[in-house]
Image (cartoon, rainbow, N blue to C red; front, side, top):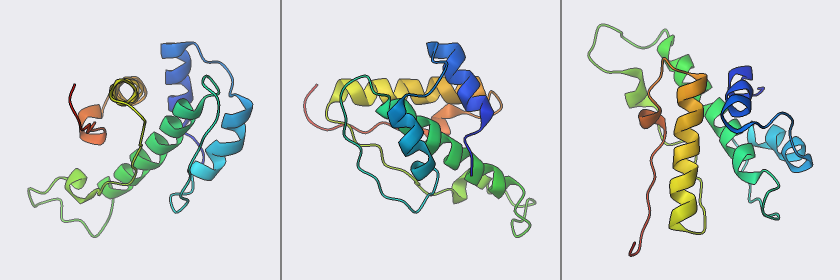
Length: 131
């Protein structure tokens, strides 16, 4: 699987990112394999968050679109394809502020790249503790 070009264009348009960092070149191919489990740790500003978002959104949207055309689905029923999409990724960050920022970025990227989809269906932020 490859990263959808619409995602790359969305990140470029929204955030001015034109080319991947060295870290992104190394880890994005690994994230695109849904069975991989990764823990990524590096300095601030190396592109960890956008690497994860780009790859995870690409995989999730691809899974969703395959459900839309799945022959075994009975489209006459009132069940929407998204009802069959299980949580496929967990993005853990160290604090509330970063969690909310990642949620915002993910929704912005999805809305820009896939205006036909609702980002709110794909991205949820869960935090604990006192604000």
